[in-house]
Length: 297
Length: 267
Image 1 (cartoon, rainbow over the protein chains, first blue to last red):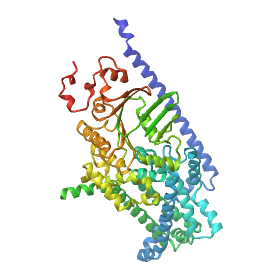
Image 2: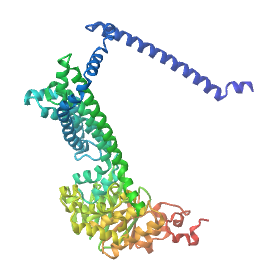
Image 3: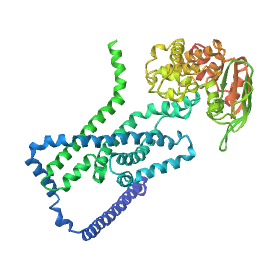
Image 4: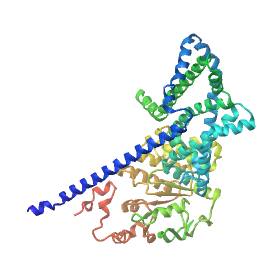
């Protein structure tokens, strides 16, 4: 009897499991030790190579924001005037972002449909279109913009082309993941009536994926506003150019820099709110509208 | 009018349709029965050219269908309407738009992309919906309709194509008995009133008996029975499904009448 209980299966399972737990704990401890060692060693290397020392400079981290905020609070009365001054360049920045999101999204739709298994027009060319998207999103906007500004001269057009190119690659990847989740049944239904590829895609796939496309495109629009502001630093115009001037002229102009930061911040919050409201209406609003009509009848 | 010669479809090591030959000389309603995996769907999909044949030919009015490509193939598909088990409508579009999709092949791509259909077509779509008794749902999204209503929208889309053949792949397999009867009655009307050739894959024997002029039985990709509903005895049905003596067709019947017959309750 005692023999039986000593070798009962549950005893074995218990001891095996405890053994496994101990082993896992040892592995975890070793991993943690290695991780900490790497962090410390890496940090020391980085700190040594720095021009100044990390810890010596750390207390100065907040000097610049403090200076900007201090100057801005002193000249608080001039803020509204700054807002008005910089509004045209903010609109230019938003325009660059909007145009490039639109253009990029249109290219992305075509590329994504061409590179989705089950929907592609030429299934064998899927890898080609995928690599095309990979390349266009691997190259940073600023590199393309610098090259284009060199070729075409400064202004919003090179920035727009650069951001569109990046957007086409980034959105194309996301769109093609959305496409993979689309039901093929409507597409097959349209195939059976003799619809061509374009008709199958626009009438069969688009109605299913539009809300997701739109929400990704709006997200991209936010990102592109920041991108087009940054491109202003390299001569693409817009609010980024003004920010660069305000910051590089140093003391005395920091109130302008603060105003530009506030404008950018406000714009991004606004776009975020608008886009979520729009997305909500697209996914829920259209369905509740007919219900309300029925209730009235 | 329709001749299928030695039609074969191979998927890897699997032969889905094996050397099938069928001749149809006049419009009628044909039911294709057989167990799951017998090749019924694949055969219908090859007729519509959703699937390419591995070998063999399909001739319609003397024209070889199997070799068509590009615009010719799409033009044939427009003449050969297909109705699916899961309806295959565009769920987020309204009912009339779904019916108008039946004309996609005849209209320019640019116009259809912006939903610009001729007013005459819209009137015809509404007339077809009226005939099928669902005109009241015309402006609703297809996804808001019940299964039976959606299948009637799919039939309306098929009629809109003004097809020479109507293919139906398990049209009532996902419907309740009441809606199944309505849909089968509608399919029968496509033959009786419009004189079209209708070929339907069916999963219940009594439906095939009741609605069809000719029944084709398939097993393991081959045609094992081809005759009138009267020739389809229980013995033949057992051969088609590879079943033994315990097989009773009433046990799985979806017809409401089957409930009244004494054999319906298995011993």
